[in-house]
Length: 493
Image (cartoon, rainbow, N blue to C red; front, side):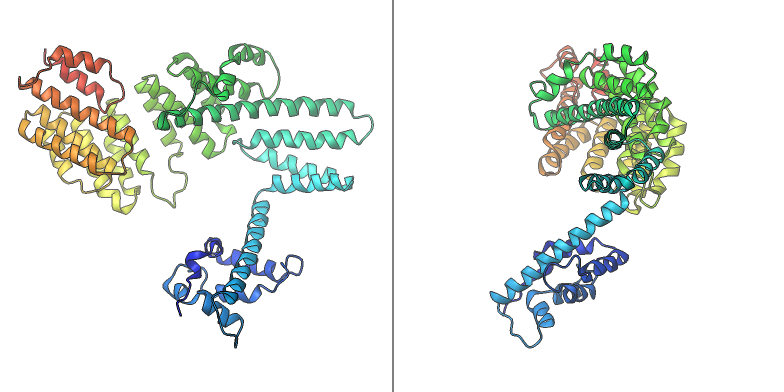
């Protein structure tokens, strides 16, 4: 008889595998509780699965947690048949999965004191049990005073004011407090709306660039565009409200999204963020600084964008969890940004120190990667080629970077035959690698195509003149190393 492998077919085991040993024990208490039982005794199934937890994807679990073997253990003496017995096992798994999801909900509430207290107060309200309001409102206030600002903070502040509003309405002679609750709740909701609008604008913009989806014709953009941000900023600057600065910051963020490249709001936004960085959680601090960095890159503020990236790094925000490796993409971006701004000593020190904090499989390759770009910036082409030859990673993005860097060296040292051969190799690599997005494929292919034209023009074999290549490059923005290409085109005159 063919067995059915439950571990591959049932989402319950995926959920259970996510639980720690302590959490799995806690789930057992819930399963045994009469209060939460789903009309059947699920504890024997829980115990049976527990023999293999937390290695539910192991070979041993894979061989023993099948429908027929589970049935034989739970119902000794009864013969398994795929139709009836299989239905019983599926029902048991479904019920235990509901218990597991109930347990995850309880864990989430335990780890989120605001939501826990908020739900409890609403239930007390529904039951007209107002005696405990004050105690639980104090708990919410205490929690909100100690927590940092993130994407949920102002929604929770608004919810807290609404709870206080409902409480104060029940008591006589509290009109002043009620009025204060209404105003504060409104302010928090406005700030939350501005934050959500900025997030929606950002997501819609990314979606537009990635998938060519609608952007300016959407309700999101049309609504955002029609707000008088500067007028609102002028108003809030005159206000004594504690929320004045955050409202101003939100407006500058939206102005930057609507008018990318406009330098004045970028610098005002940056100054406000850095001055008030202590408001925010670490994750939010990182997101804000990375957003400023992107704004500056789009505005072609190279030096300033690198300074923001370096500031982010020095604050430890790229590597907040020291139990995990240093992020590979941030390592690359910091090196490339520093080199573009001639920060050679800083780059050398950074490579030497931080390549050791990457995942072990990347450490040596990324050491040579960084050294290759550092030698390139110094014009030491011989050592660039040596470092590139020592790079062995198969990661497509980094392989392309190294191949293109090698091609640029061949161009500089007049190794034309090697350059043309590498161009052919690059085109094949780009064509065969399915992990490269269409946007990035065009980005790299544009560079390869223009380099080939420059080589032919330099060898006086091309149909395009230096003037024509320069004119074409001046109209192009979204290709790799476009500034280097323009520089090489100008040298052909």
